[in-house]
Length: 464
Image (cartoon, rainbow, N blue to C red; front, side, top):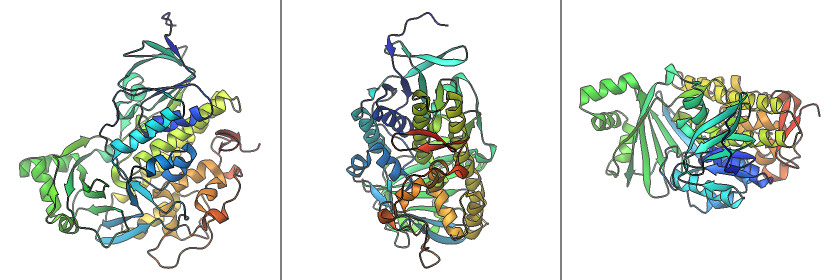
């Protein structure tokens, strides 16, 4: 055991102020726990991951942060548009209930700052420009950590939300592994004066597959720019750069091969240089251990294809907060809380991983993706169409169902009458008037536990 005396003490130490860390910290502080959050940068700071899912709305409501995010003036995202493998279709969120018919296309610098400021408002002690350097273990349990400003901080629990840097999983424990199937590279820039897309839902993200390898995203932002990114595998990227003379030439060539997107950009001006990231699809062997929980990108990251990054970050931040709160309140044992977190977060991640993998087979077509989603959904799909299973998963709604049992019906309405028409997919919810109590569903418990939101955030036994 280290003899150095801690200069600061807290119940929960959070490393990282992005969506995962800010969510976990704010939820724990709202319950009266003492929380310190360390963030290595000063916000606002640039970050990619701009297209968010409707599952964001109930999490913002749980945080009490929806109004703060709405005030930012982000583009409202009412669906998604796919020009994929020779087929075109739209997903619309208007069946998710009157209070969840949209999400946001965000400038992440503004969105992340809004969440971090909200955490501070909830009582979290936030220290920016303060990096956590080392986590110290005693008898296999995380007990304290050292930062570059205060020295040693002792804690009862650590939430590692340090993003791709992966303080624990990548640097100290070295349990992160990359997915060979997703050894991809993304190159993106911002454009101004792009034409409006009249065939897509309002504010939709638009996804365009390339005829050979890769795809583009196009995301409208409230500052008047369009985020346009190319994603392709490392081999194709390297070969294209060599053949065409550089990354910019490759980006321009692939745009020319995507006629629908090229038409939107005809007359538009690229107003930034290209940014490039690679090898961003990975997963840690474990998401938690004695005294610590790894949340958001620190634990895993999939792929930008289905815009799941912020969803998994905030979802895992909420799960970590509930697990820690349950252990601190002694509602469940620490081991039970850890099993719940590992099982719930891992399941959400792996289901999306399978769906993303299926999507990369661009020749399967739309109905094949819908059928794959139905097989991955745990809820009874008999009264629903297969299109709705796909929507439930890609909007994050299914993850809420898995951990909350029937609770999500309060947020999205009862799942009763499907909307008419093949393309107007949705849950057919009736909104607030159909909201019901938060019963626990034993059949959807994880490790024998279910998420509890009332009377406080935590976990409850499925048979209790």
